[in-house]
Image (cartoon, rainbow, N blue to C red; front, top):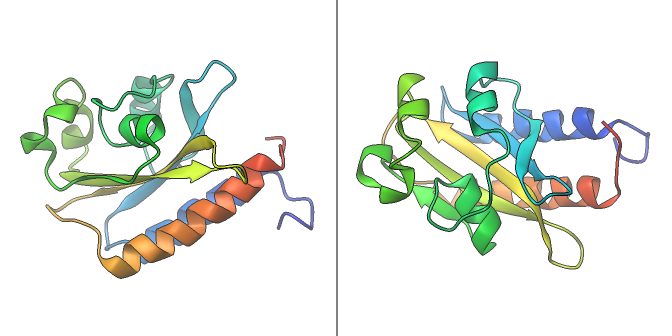
Amino acid sequence: MMDAGASRLEILTCLVSAAEIVAAPGAVSSILVLDEDGLLRNGASPNLPSDYLHAIDRLKPDAGVGTCAAAAATGCVVITPDFRADGKWAELRHLPLALGYLAAWSMPIRSANGAVLGTLGTYYTNLRQPTAVELDSIALLAAAAGRALDRRYNA
């Protein structure tokens, strides 16, 4: 898709769709991208409602907040097997819980030089952690997203 000149949005949406195929049934995935101010913005989240995306728009990377903000801040995979039991979700847990999501995890998306460019997160309707296969698969998708974002594709 990159070589064919697809837009950044098309590429990221395809990667989100692939992440949802890897995930359990009923899960949704999302790519958030760091903007020029260092805030997380929606890159591609076709199956999350717009009001949810609006509520999380412009999150500042913070190791103590949620999964995507924490993954962007730390550069590490962040796993939340239960929103209700994780203090990082204290201020935000009402948002995914209102949609029926109980767990999530997020992987940083990196540039070729290792800089964090965004996150690839997945929300689940059951209490769970990712399997080794899911982690490996999402790591490959995050790497592809990093290449797409690193190439400075336009939306």
